[in-house]
Every structure is written in C-alpha cells, then in structure tokens.
Image (tube, one colour):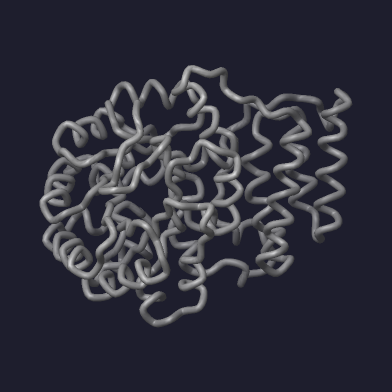
Length: 368
C-alpha cells in the first residue's frame, strides 16, 4: 500500500476524499485536509452546462486553496464539446486534475446524458474523453460505477476504453446505477478492473471504518481508496488510515477536539455563506459526525431545531461539555441506529433556495 502517481502527481498517502454533491465544497475539503492523511481532494461534481454558460455558482464550485493540492475538479455532462470546454476552464483556474463523473445515478443527470448514463453509451463516452484529452494538458481521470444494471455490468470494458484514450486514473464505485446507494459495493468487480488495466485504479464504496477499508483494499489490490460518508462521520479517518499504513496506532481525538472541529467548521461556513445556508450545512455534517456518540440522536434533534448561529453554538457547547464531564445527555444511549440518509442540504434548511439543482440532483451525500 504505497503512494501512487497520476502522471507526475504523487498521491501520498493513497487516500482520496470522494466527491459528494452538496458536501465536498471549499469549506469541507479544507476541514478534512487539515486533519491530515488525505492524498487527493476532489470538488463537488460540477455541471459543464452551468460552467460554460458562466453560471456564478458553477464557477464558485471550482474555487480551491493552495493547501488543498493536489486538487481535482470533477465535471459532468453529456455533450463532448461542453465537457471539453468545462475541462479547459478547470485547468485555467489551476486544478491539478480533471475528473469525469460517469457514476451519478440521479434521474435528472441520467436524463441529460451525464453521470451513469454514459455507461450505456460507450461511443459517446469515448468521444467525450477524447475531446477532453485534446483540450487539456493536465491529467484526465474517470470516476465510474461497475455498470448500469446487474445485467449490463461493463466496468472492465469501460476501463480498458478509458485507458486507451489516455485516462490516467480510474476510480470505481462498486455498485450499479440501478442499485443507487442500496446494498453493498462489490469489491470483486473493482478488483477485476484493477487486473484489467495498467493505470492506477482506486476503489470506492462502504468504507466507514479502518478495518473494513483495509480488508477491501487487500481484497481488490487497488492502488488507492476513496472515502466519502466515512469522512463526514469521522473527519480523522484519513489520518487514522495513514497511521495504520505506517505502523502507528491510529489517532483518537478526544471530546474536546471533536467539539473544536464542529466549531471550526461552523466558523468557516459563516465566513463563506449566508447564515441560513451555513445552518443547513452544519446540520448536515452534525447528522453524520455524531453517529455513535452518547446521546447523539437527541443532540442532532436539538441542532435540527436550532434557527440561529447562537442556538447552534449554545447547543454544541452544552452537549460536549456534558460529555466531557461524563454526565448523561438525553437518554444516555450510544447509538446503533440506522444510517441517517441525507438527500441534500435542502432537507436540512427551511430555505428552498439554499441549495442549487446541481447539488440536489445526485444523492452522493449519502455515498462512500
């Protein structure tokens, strides 16, 4: 389990923050990067239709900080000329890598010919990748699913074609489009892709613990691992993975540090966006971050019913001070509850304009 290269870019450690719509924005990426252990961060998936029409929000989604490097911009769409133009724009803003989304299962994206729709139209996907390759000088990578449906699994075929036109890193989510985010990712299929091509291959799906991730890594013999929802639940997961890879005991943050991270995130959000949007984003992260903590479910309810920055800060302080003093919060139970499904930040805000169509169009916020 060594670092790998995408052309001349070293991915070290070989751990990638998976793109998640409505989640992996400028604020969240920096929060995770500062915890350590991340070899590559990727933007939210960005519509090339918005980019090439100079949509302000789409252009803002490409914003990044030097501390995030290496940094990849992920784009989606179905028209080769627009995809090439979007890729050029990503290179112009200084991105290190352009990544093509070939996995989003959302009906809106698929209807537009993007995301996992491309798995059913390999000639068009080849045309798109070829057009992008001709238009940029930085590396081109691909994020894909194993197939459109169980009966049309074609991950190996797609990967071989992508390699033949110059794609330099292939990331495979081990589910089909029809599965959405149900069931378990098939890491055997991810391993088959790794065996079929010579470019680096990274795997994605269900990595929320170090032990599970290490087993899947060994099983598929991939070059890298992508983690999405696991990073929302545990912002230190990349550092912990890196510790294990280097023979160290995995880092364990204490209650005070967990509180500090939530406060840091909220402060960063307030600097970047209107309060109502910041509140929704904060509730989104807290919904995952507090899983498994004593009284976490009841703490989330207090946050969901908070309507101002002051209320959010007060509730965070009360909750974590209670834990630090080893007192009981709420019912005092440690959860073994079902996953909290986050469809988008729309579900966590009273403002219907808090999220764009791009963010709500693909439920990658609940992936891994």
